[in-house]
Every structure is written in structure tokens, then in C-alpha cells.
Image (tube, rainbow, N blue to C red; front, side):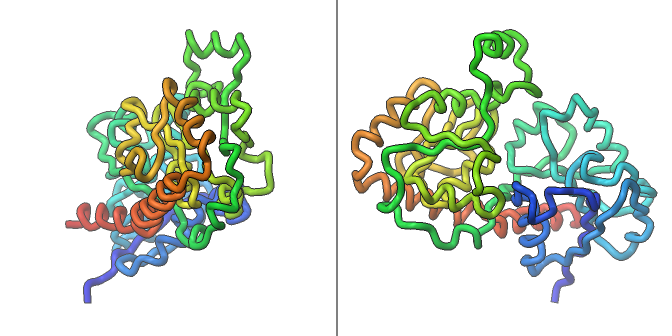
Length: 328
């Protein structure tokens, strides 16, 4: 029998994203649940303070896995990492924090061999040197939360759900975004179309924390609606696979800029693709005939694609394949 890959997972004790009580349980389910379900690996968890002595890992582990690639939720000091002789893989954290916190400096400090995240390699290399190794791993969808969903016919049909961060549409804010493009400031820059959608009378908007459906309850919010919006300007977020998994007809911003095609959805078959030129037309096509059977067919096919191809277990398989490749 082939030996399991022994993984040392290192993170800060204070990491709120690995607490099931946090409003965002995405990372908890991937790292604390899905990793344990894979039979090819054995994971030991090392919750730590601001320093961790890696000498204790030598000869006992095959891979060091870091929650992310800087000291926000990983110990600042990985003592002896340069001598431990174990490959280091790190999840890539917030891309827009790279320059602000000099995150690239942690590449050598942590001796990182490989990065992973759910974004494309092209997007990763817009922020990191081309020589840094990166693999796209589409994690985030915990299958058990979407096993059963409410009937499509019983859902709200005359409104389209829109949720998440949006930008400020004041004239001053628009001018600032136009000329300075503050990536770290107004979310209008990263969620332009999502923000524009909130201006439509038939779009029900709710911010991330303005409702009771946070954490594991979020799928219940999605299931109230027949349709919902997944729109990000530069790169898809997990909403792109959460929304269809909940059985919603997903209006999905897919453009050359955000490279959304890599998720595998097909326009008119598993989602409805939108952009800043056609979104109103696409919404009106649905709202003028919401009981047309084709919408439920597209929603069901989108759900099937998300659950079969974009779930946490598939993501762990992809990550394990990376580990096997590194260890060859």
C-alpha cells in the first residue's frame, strides 16, 4: 500500500477564518474538513503563535502547507525553514495586499516552492514574478451545504439577487476611480458591474453582513431566488460556483478581462453570461418570461457542473496531484 503524504499545516491560532463561527466559512471547510477526507494524505494541524520552530517537522513530514503566504494568518517566523528540507506550498492570499504589505518578501522568508489559489495563473503573475510557481485549485464549494435545495418553481421569480461588496456611486467617488483607480479603496473598481446592477429596481441587493444568512447559512439565502448575479471585474470569486450550486439561474460576468471561461460554464447552457453592454437586456429577457422552462434547465445544468467539477473534494485532489508532482 502506497504511503500517505504527510502534511504539516501551519497557521496562526488567531486565524478567524478557521473558526466555524466566522461569517465566511469557505476556508474552514477546505482546510479543516475537505483535506481530512482525502485518503492519499495525512494532515497534522499546527496552530501557532507568531513563531514556529520547523525543526520538529524534519523527517516526519513530506509537505509543509501554509494557510497563506504572509504573516497575517501564518506565524511571522518559521524558524529553521531554510534547513528543514521539506517543500513548502502556500495558498495565495489577497492579491491587492501584495504591494501594501510587501508580501513578495515572504517568498524567500518562508522558502515557498509553490502557490495555489482559485484564480488563474495569468492573474497571479500580474502581482507576482513570472518565476514563482502557481497552480489554480478551485476550492470553496463544500458539497454537504448544497446537497438538497428548494424547488425552482417555489422561489422568488420577479427579482434577481445581488450580494457582496459594492462600490460608491457618488460623483466624487466615480471621479477618483476614473483617474486614480484605487484598487485598495472603493470596491467599485473590482465590482463595477455588480455595483451597477444595484441601481436596477428588479435587483434585490444585500451586503455581506446585512442579513442572517452568513457562513453556512448563505446557501439558504440563495435558494430563496430563482436567479442571482455573479459579477467581478478582474477575476471570478467563489460566488461563481456557490450561486449555481444552490440551483440558481446564474447571471455570470464572463469577459476577456476576468478570464471567467476557465470555470467551464457555457453561456445559455449552464449560466447566462453578462457584461456591461448586455446585462440589462439579459435580465429583461428572463424577467419578461420567468416561467419559461429553459431557465430551470439552465439552472439545473449549472448546479450539476458546479457540484461535480468545482467542489472542495475535487480541489483537494488537484492540490494532492501538485504535492505528488513536487515529491517526484
